[in-house]
Each structure stands twice: as C-alpha cells, then as structure tokens.
Image 1 (cartoon, one colour):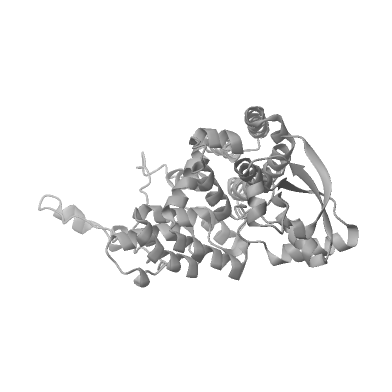
Image 2 (tube, one colour):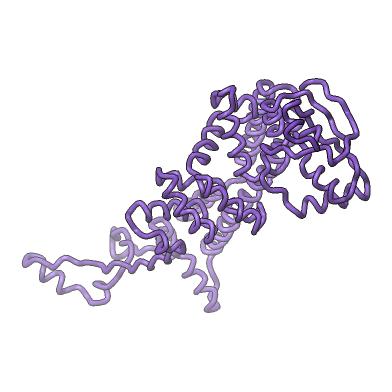
Length: 409
C-alpha cells in the first residue's frame, strides 16, 4: 500500500465513491455509527484518495473521494460532525476501486454487492484473468468464476429487483446467492428476469429454486408453480402372495391348519428332533438374529408382572444402551460439527484480517496449512474416541459376544 497521510478533512469536501461495492447502507448501522461518533468519537480513520484535476472540475465542491468508510462518513454527516479523520492514499481511480473492494471484504457485504464488484473488476482496463482476480482478492478461482456466472444471469432489471428487496426487508432477509444461481439453469437472462419475482416473493430456497427452473423448462407457466411440495403418501404394505398348490402337493397343503397358513415372519430353523424343542433363551436369541423384534415381547412380559430371566434382562439393557449411544452419536455429532464450524469461522476471520497484509500468496498458503492442521486435530480426536470404545459398534460386538456365550452355555 502506498504511503498514507493522516489528515482531518471537512466532511462536506469528501464525496462517496460512485463505484463503491456497497449499493445499500443499512439505516440502522448509520444510526449506530452516528451515536457512537457522538459518544466516544471516531476510533478508525476513513480512507480517501485525492481527486484528479479533471474530477475537481466536474465536482468543484469536493476534494477527496472515499475508498473505505462510507458508513463512518454517513454517520458523521448525520451526527453533524464538521470533519473526519482520514488516511489519504495516492491511488488512481482504478486502484481505488480494487482497494475499496478489499476494504469492504473485511465487513459484512451483501452477496450481490460482492458479485457486481467482481464483475466490474473483470471488465476493468487491466482485463485481469480469473486467477489474477482470485490472487488479488484472496479467493479461489472457482469462487470468482461462480460470482461471474451469477452476474451473467442477472439483467439490470433483475439486479434492481433484488436491491429493492434488500431495502424493503434488510440484507439478512433476502434470498441467497445460491438460490439466484439456480436460475442460471434457464440459460436465458431475460427468462430468468421473468422468473425472479416468484423466487423473491416466495423466498425460495436453493432446492425450491431448482424445482422452479425444472417447472419452467418443462413449458409450465411460472405462476402455477407450487413451491410447497405435497407430502408423500405412505406406502401400503404389500400383500403376501402364496402360489397355488399343484396337484402333486395339494394334499399336504390342504392338511395345514389355517393358523399355520397365516403365520407371517421369519421361519425358525427346523428342529432336529421333536423331543428336543428350543429353550426360551434360544428362541429369543434366534429371533434377535433373524430380525424378529423381541424387545416388545420382553416389555409385555414385564408389564404382566412376570419376572424376566437373566438373558432377557441383558438383552433389554443392551437395547437401551444402544439407543442411548445412537442418540449421543446423532446429536453429539451435530453439536460437535456446529462448534467446529463456529470455531473455524472465528479463526478464519481473525486469520484473514491478520495475514492479508503479508500478501495474497503467503495468506493462501498459510490458510491452507492451518486448515489442514485443524482437520488433522479433528481426525485425531475422532480416532482417539473410537479407540477408547466410544462407538456403538463396540457395544454391539460386546452384546453379541455375550448372547452367543449364554446360548452355548
């Protein structure tokens, strides 16, 4: 960055950047900035550049143009401050546009502001490649390509529609970039412009937007699209089909009792001898092995006041242990993933603000190495947890071993 000069400049002599990335300054943020400036004063200087002689002729009431700090400037005007502390940077208008985009990336920008800023940068006189823009902004080439695809999908009228929603609902309540990107599937910006109002009015998600695109491409009117999918009808169980007995086996089939003919479920193994029937324990073990739900039978037995045997107690206890472990794995995994994402987000923001001064190459290499280290730590924690038995498969293996031992014993 060129050498900067810190000056106190009259607020009325500073003009906003007509090409600044932010198209919309949230009124609540301007109000908060004005209140902060009144109470504790200006803590961070704004960034400006001196106007060229040609620009001074065009706008004689201004001497400087903002690069970064549009909310501070608007807040100072609202607070009635006569001057603003500014870092004066000796930059050309083209350099100032890139510097303004880099400065605003450290704050919350609406996704459309960022997309249009990338589009303007790609159309600048320098005619940079996507990889060059990625190096300048500290993003991947794929992210730059994605932003340009979104910009290509939106006509000027489509962009105005989105900004009207931003002004009406606030930046945090507008449709996402991914939802709008789904309209690229129409391969026609004019058609996307006609479909966009439905997407905005109904606040469609990415998945719903993709279904809307499929609906329109099939030749259906866009207004007839129903984004609320009807619930699927429950599947009816298929009737058990029994082959008609042939003449050779008609007599044995007729000899079967009606009760045995209607029995549904897995077939138990054939008894080796009528004199050696299965014990209750062996019956339960066999039922558990082939998929028959025996837990309900044990519960019904306890409910009747009958005393379960040792094997039934162990089987019921194992059932509840597995359910508890399944709950821990399901919800604990979600909490761990959410916490990891939050930690990574805070870490990434701190890393971005701290390393951007070192240059894009060092920044990307450092970010990649630290990201790999973070994943390695997560993998190590997961492996240690698994190795020390915190896994439902271990409990299932132990229970199965116990069942086999009891059956054989």
